[in-house]
Amino acid sequence: MSTIRLTKEFHFELAHALEGYDGACRNIHGHSYILFVTVIGSPISSVSNPKLGMIMDFGDLKGIVNSTIISRFDHALLLNQSSSMLKTLRAESFGKVESLPFQPTCENLLPYFAELISSRLPEGVKLHHLKLNETATSFAEWYASDNL
Image (cartoon, rainbow, N blue to C red; front, side, top):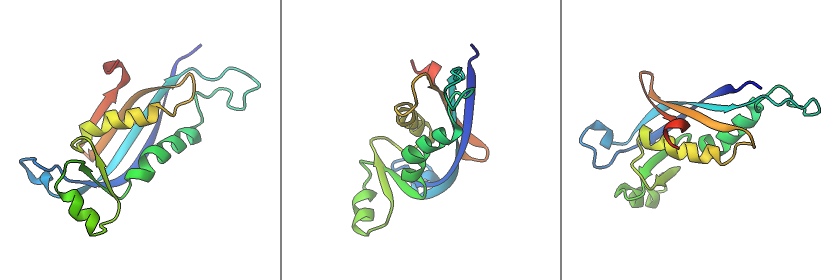
C-alpha cells in the first residue's frame, strides 16, 4: 500500500498587532495569508467505498479548514489575549476581533492551526505539515515529525 501526501491551499486576510514588539509590527496591520495544508495517508482500497483511491476528499479537507480556520480568522483582527488594545476595540464594536493566549505571529499560529485541523481529520489520515505564507516572500512551516 502506498503512502501519499495530499495538499490543499487556502487564502485569507488577517490583521494583527504584535504588542510589545520593537518594530513596525507592533502597529495594527494586515497580511494576505496563504496556508498550505498537507495530510498523509494511504488511498482507500475498499471497492465499496465511494472514495476509492483517495486519502480523503479534497472537499472534506476544504470543509475542515474552512470551518476551523478560515471562517474564524478571515478578515479578523488577531491579538494576544493580554493586549491592552482588546478592551478598547471591543468597546468600540470594532468588529471581528479574535484573541489568543499567545503573540499572534506566523510561528505561533502554526501549532495552533495544526491542533485545530488534526482533531477533525478522518481515521487513517494524519496532518503531515503546514506552511503559512505571511507575505509573498516570508513563511513559516510546521511538521508533525518535528513535534512528536
